[in-house]
Image (tube, rainbow, N blue to C red; front, side):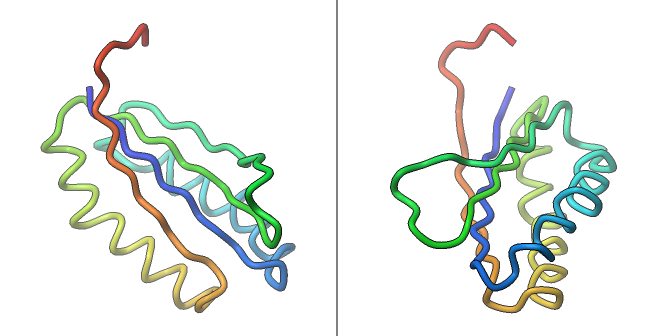
Amino acid sequence: MKVLSLTFHSTPNVGKEWENFVQNELIEMAESLQEVKNYLISEVETDMLSEGRNTNLLLIFDNNENRIDFLENDLQNIAGELEVKFGNNVLIFDTLLNPIKSNF
């Protein structure tokens, strides 16, 4: 099992548009990813954030090859779509997680 955490930081001036995107398009995108075994979309609560909001998409893959394929292909497409829709108002931070132990 390999895991990828994508955190999307959206600025306050696209708040409502970002919320609509998450509820409609991001969920649909996550459900259509064939190489993803499971996913979790979450709103991130943190005291470290004073402006905007963070949304996290946690993706679980069966193996590293599927995760690499996602990073090289699907993530590039998602980033391109976000750039067109939101410009610099949504940033993506990816974190590769390599579980040591899991009870999934």
